Each structure stands twice: as structure tokens, then as C-alpha cells.
Length: 409
Image (cartoon, rainbow, N blue to C red):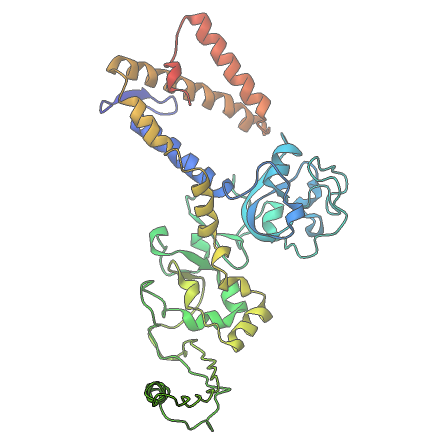
């Protein structure tokens, strides 16, 4: 498995190498992404009856509602199950995941569509929010992804507030961020719309800290200062004295102490000339940053006023959703682990034959898909099935046995 096989690329004269572990690793990465995005969603049942689902994979069908490309009021979204059962072979926009959304398939937003899974959808989904992604546009540049007119290789990051996707170069940053350095991002527009988040910039750096880096404000509103009873040790001392009452005497009943409720605000103070202060653009947050947001009554009301109270819900994060999806499908081991285990059972000749067949298949598949790119056509499931049926027929006619059947999963 440690050998390398040369593969002549038709598009250039450079020599590239592919190994079986490379193939298995690439497959594992693709499957892990699929499990993360789709694993937490229901692929068999329409989610309409569940109401506004906390987070789920969504799609926009431009075959059924082509007007959505240019008319905002025509935007709509469908769940994973409906994308498979009601919109198969349609032109779909993959929207990754969105929060608090109810499926539109067959509803007032898509009156010409008959949902096969939940035919009765009379109530309008007034609480759904449709950003430009539902029209196939992204970022402040308002361009599609992938963009046929943009040759710049750039990472796209999703804002956890507006849930739009942004090119890293359009986030007004002094220098690009590495995905290893942050857990979530809030775009510049949402930072301006929710200015209280600016107080936390530069104050949450170590996820293992139990306190913020700066001085906190303490609001003791509601504290009854007239209660001048002795310090914390007095109630304990009184219980000790009562326990020592002479035999036959009733211990003196302990007076009920008034419950003191402190409403403490832990939102950091902004120091105008401080080194760690929000200046402009997007803000990148470490994993687990939400737990440091103040939850005093005033701040909670502030979150509700701005419609971002979901920031206090740990199950709202994409990471939580992805972890749920991975757990649902991770009991049998990864494709990489299974593949490496089977690979170790094969001899060198069989490994070479397998790589040869794989390289032949990928070359033919690339040629096949190039036709759709040239003609600007959508690849359907029938097209893929036809391709592999033709490939299998050619293999049988050439007498090639192909890879060992027990390698297929």
C-alpha cells in the first residue's frame, strides 16, 4: 500500500501520484462532510409537522420556482426528505443548514407543487427567514457559488447571525483567519446591528477560562440592603446551637431567611483606548464563546429585542448539529478505517489492478461530466446510472474483471 503509481493527466504534462490510502482518505472526508450536513436531518419524513425546526439541511428548488432568482418574495426552502422525494432531478440550491425554518414544499410559497410526504400545508410559514442564499447569491459581492467569473481561490465562512456566506477576503480583515483558530464568525453587518457583541471582542480568548479577561459590571438591582442580618456564618452557627438543645426541650425554630436574588451583569466594559477593542469588520469567536454571554435580565431582554436569543442555546450551533449527525452514523467505523482494513488483506498485484481501474473510472467520469459543463446542463441521477451501466458493459466486453467484488461496500 506504500507504493505509488504514476498517472498521466490529460490536461497537462506533469506527473501526479495517487495511492490507495489517498483514495480512502478522500472518500472519508466526503462521507464525513455528508454525515455532518445531512446526518442530523430526516431523509424520510417531511419536517413540516415538526414546526420551525431548530436546525436542518435546506434546499431551494429553482425548477419549481425559477422566479426566486430575481424576486425576493418568491424565495422558498424545502427539507431534505422533500428534496429527495418531491424534487428529484430538479435544479436545487444546497443551502447547508438554517435555523428555525419550516418546509415550504407544497405550501403557500410553492402553490404549484404537490408535496408527496405532507400534502396538507395550508398555513403560511410567516416565521421563515429568506436571505439572498435562497436566490443562489452569497456574500456582500452578491455572487453565486461557485462563481464562474471568479478564479480566486478563497474560503467561504457562514455568519452565525444572518447565516449568509462570505468570502474571507470580503470580511474586512487585516489578515485571513485559519479555520483552526475560530469556532464561529459574526459578519461586520451583524456586529453593527448587534453592538452589544462588540463588548466581548478581545475578552474571550481562552475557552478554558471561567472568567472574562476584563472587569465586569455588577448590577445588584433588587438586593435588599435593609436585611442587615449577620454574615454567612450565622445561620450555620444557629443550627449548631439548636442541635445542642437540652433533652426534652424543643429546639428553637429557625427563622426563614429571605432569599436574596442577585441579577449580576457580566457584560465587559468597553475601554475606548483599550488594546483589545472592536474596530470594524467581522468578529471571529473561539469554540464555546456563547457560554460567556451575559444572561442577566437586561441582557436577555436585549437579545430578544434584537432577535438573537438563540445565541444562548447551545443546541443552535452548527457544531452541535454536525456532532449529532456524526453520532448517528459513526457506529460502524469510518470508511477510511474499513477500507484500510480490507486493503491490508490484498496482495500487491490486486492493489495495482484496483488503482488502475480506479484511475480509468475517474478519467472517464471527468470526460463525461465535462460535457454537462460545456452544455450548461444539470446532471441527473439517470445520467449517472447510465454512465456506470455503460462502464460496466465495456468492462465485461473487454474481459476485465475489475476490482475484487468484496471491496465494494
